[in-house]
Length: 387
Image 1 (cartoon, rainbow, N blue to C red):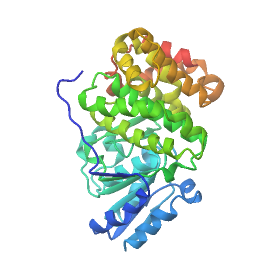
Image 2 (image 1 turned 30 degrees about the vertical axis):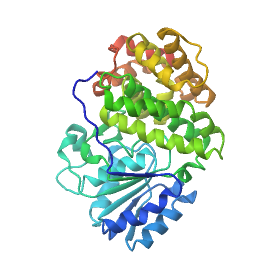
Image 3 (image 1 turned 90 degrees about the horizontal axis):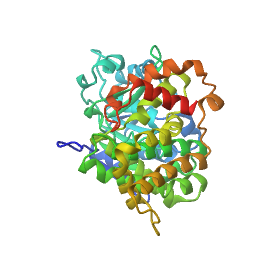
């Protein structure tokens, strides 16, 4: 565990009933005149943008729409959107969407310059500085993008995803309103929910875990484990959906102080080469990696049991408690019908194992945070387990 640590969060966060009503006063107090709205066509078609756009119009600001964001975009696609954004003179950003939409908006907020772009930030992310304030309104309960200083983009030439990390991308305002995830399809709710689950347990069991991150990671883990099934399976379970939305944010805050580990590290090649949704790739690896890590973080998993299991507790030893939590993770992935075989579900051939190992081992930023050291042979065994 770290002996020095810090915590950085968005300046203002709103949640609860009718939280979207805060859009207008946020824009008014920031004297926003021209608002760039980052979103996706699926969100517009679902009608989720109607009220936010109304609030922006009532603030008196002009609206410029950026609504053609592809899912799981490459850095090239993000750059194309930012090139359009930076010549229009927008003085505020509102992003309504999942992780890809929010990440693009965060990158736009620090890239109102011709000196460098997204590609340059892949090599030197710290060089950029915030130029435009932003408001994030997540439409999934999972990525935690609204809380993190991270932006994930695909790098086609390497067939991987890479995280750009810069504290300047921590947003100014966040609105968590469960209305925005009420109509989320079960498949997307499941994948993004397990992504948040991975964030929480990885942050709690990583080398960089600390008293700050533990507070947020453990609370998020408790809320997700006990609400994810209802939130995904019952369209009317608004309290469970609210709990998931808040938990995803809390897990995102934990990332800023601690960070993810081998689950995310080994999942990046799955999204980069095979375009497996980020949440699904994390779900496939979640239980196998945690079983691999278990001897090195057994006490932490036991603490998670003590916090997250409500009612009668039947496990007494740390080993029993640890096994219970890992089995709970596996049961959630299975219960949400997320495929766990790369070959059967996604057509990943066995001969690609060398690529996966090489690409996964390149994610040292995350692998060094894993309590159990991960060698290339370890990575190979983990990939073989999920093939």
